[in-house]
Length: 393
Ligand SMILES: *Cc1c(COP(=O)(O)O)cnc(C)c1O
Image (tube, rainbow, N blue to C red; front, top):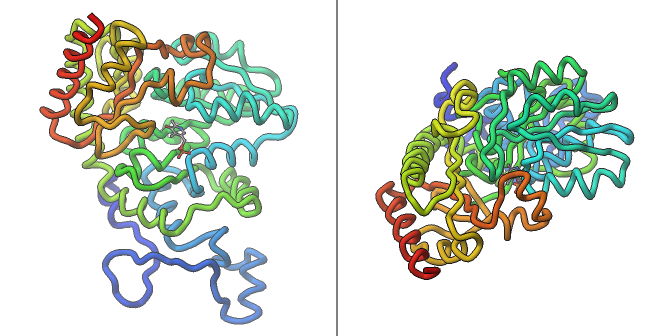
């Protein structure tokens, strides 16, 4: 099998013998051994098989196998949440004295890990800007072991050339780790562009229906082996039930992403024409500063649009309160369209200065475009812009 959609549907776990067409859920904490020798051989890694669901389970194995094929990686590892995937990767691969160079514009909790948690264990970090690639090389230190990047970034929708960054990382013997959450493997495959690991919050577009948390790490047998050695004993395992949901979700990822992208582009184009909007960021708008890179490395622009409404916090909050259909929520990548005000929610732990450095002003709103009819999505945004304009006039 070679095509994305087919792999996402047809790769399947072992079956129970009942000839079920759809994968069953393996709710079992442990597994039986044929005999004492079988147990010994499995523990000695001489034979492959399930031992205990903190290590592996048919549902998580199916999800990992599918995702590895979709990302073009050798193998992968599944975790309970996206943050568990990021924490596990850093904790497994870094030691005291190591340094991480990260894009400045990253998920709020990843920022917390780098700034407040890892320094306690002697792991330091510094930030570089996605829109200033010329500065990256000078920020690499002799102890820089890992380069971490989110592209497109949350919520600034900045982009960096992954092929270029992979070459720079190799030159300095650093691992390149990409948070591929916004793009999903359907739109962007960092490992094929030279990255060492691709990480996902499966909570977002991979589930796609706002039901469950999950994380995935994809990469080589060697690196995933190191991550597995850490994760087996520290315990961030994904539950079989969540793995079952996420594997089912992958079956519809391509059709969902096609619609998310088509509608998000229409929203971005609509906003760009609107006088009430100061700025719109969407990868496939020609006005995006990294439009050419986005076109080169992404199949389409994704489901997230970030824009700045005129009138600062007052206008932004009134706009959010005037939305009739959109949900106000911190999540993204759902069938339901969602609006978030990053400055007061996901990025509220940053200082105002830190926020402005990554383009999050008080008027910035991030929308995750859902799968409702495009006319209803556009109508809701348009009427909320009108109502909020009258309210602050
Ligand atoms: C949500 C998110 C995460 C964290 O994932 P959880 O599943 O919530 O732990 C990491 N990176 C990005 C870009 C995200 O949007």
